[in-house]
Image (cartoon, rainbow, N blue to C red; front, side, top):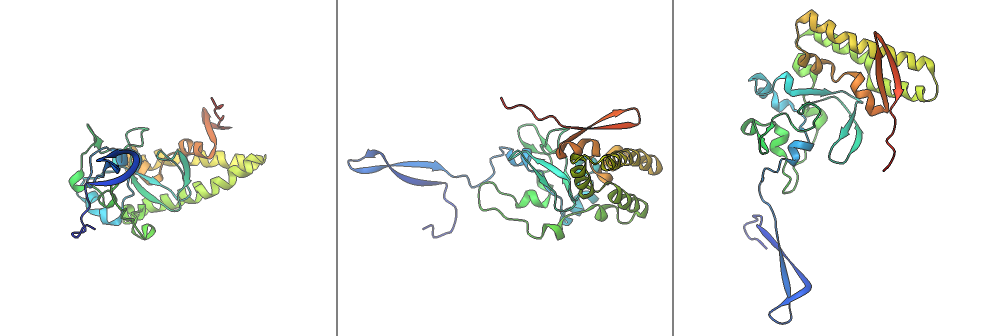
Length: 251
């Protein structure tokens, strides 16, 4: 036993697949990392959820609107690590990736974090090389849009109206009805898509906000996220056409 309770650099396994010094089993040595080697895997596949503890990073400009995206309650999110789709249990603010890539927007060069010394709390807690420090009470500790825009009533009212009209929980129910042939549900989904598309430029013009701030206020456009529900949207002028996503044939 390590009397100092410090992790060892290697551990040894005895194997009968060879012998040394007569009849003694040969030893195989495996390296065991005890620190970050900057492989970048966590930054490419697990963007952090921002916590209330990260408020100072927003206040001092380390993290700006263009670095963040809101994941709304009930939104379906594709996981790069296990290639599956998950339903968000509640609203979360996360760091955005590079374009369509899920890699953290602050990851640069040879797996270098551009804000390593002032990285978010979840990044500081995460260690891929040892026992995980789990962020407990995420629902209570997470940052939300009300933490960011709570003192701007007009924005909060816009968010509330958008959630009532464009709720992902409502969208899931409607699309289930659409799959069953409900034409009225399909019309409601198309109305929802139009409302989402029109609310964005309206608020941007009203308050002089950039597209990045609008994306943070309303989340990703429904025309993008509806694909995770098995549908895609085609636009014909001001009209939208809802189509089922064709499944790729197995090779």
